[in-house]
Length: 285
Length: 162
Image (tube, rainbow over all chains, first blue to last red; front, side, top):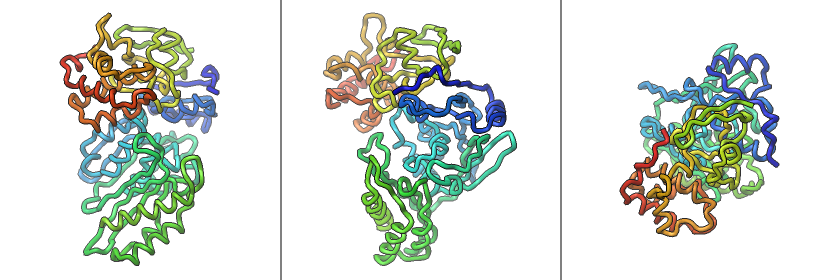
């Protein structure tokens, strides 16, 4: 049953500073709403627990893409449409561009934000595997100050993150040092359009003379959180791509993935398909 | 209750509403514009599509507070008086509408698509309308209507939302 909107409080402070003030005043009492593509669905389903909400959708301070020769910094309020349109995302970060393009419909991409996708922390979310593979770093802000952390340290468990109750995800920073890396990403869902993934991988690999010199694999729906597959990466590092290496990598992947049975798929299917995706990538190198 | 001022189909309007009230409900209940429909109520079906500052959005996912100062175009603002918009005319001629529930959203999604890609290929049409579900037509006639609209003069000269 739908929630009664009269029970909810929603404000839209004029500045980021004012938002941080509210979060600091009553930490944990307020939930941020940007594009609303998650919160408003929860409202419609009658499962929006937060009663006090702060809108940050209008804050242009959070909606930017800043480019230097070395890096790109993406404000958390950047929409998926903004990402898809940006020339440097298109040229340097095909994994992110692809993830943005298969997140929901055009109408959702016009509203949903990169920051929301990260903070909502769904294990099945579309952009986290790409951001993990790109070794993004996050900037978190609060009235206490600013801190940065590797994105790999952000997800702590099922829908648990390192974000403190008075903090807001400000921006996502990615180095433009991926020249020569071969990208791979594939999302397996019920259908191509608008499906939530059963399993997804995003990976980058640097090889020299057929040997893996660096590999980063981000995964969705294989653990209780978006995760790097570090054991799989270790099994591949400094190895030539041979049938034996592929078999070892498949085995390593199965040791570190813990998919579940749910309405979208089964654990067995997810594990098997994930290993197949990995093999597909390795055979393409 | 919060006072919200916004522009609907070119007309400035002021309403009083709970700030989290959905734009869809404000359109239908407060402003009696019932062209936008509620299908799923969770941003999957697109039957509540409107243009917000020229961008296609699902009005069921927009809290009214976030529409403060915005320019909204609904299906009621697409035709000029009694004359159908060229996109509507193409849907009519191609049989792109049957029961009609998805049609307002389809028309607005098509408008948004043709602004972006005046001559879309089939893949672009499919992607542009992927968020609008139709349970009657099987989509083929809708795609034909969009293709015809893309070849029709005046399709892009719609009442501007901004």
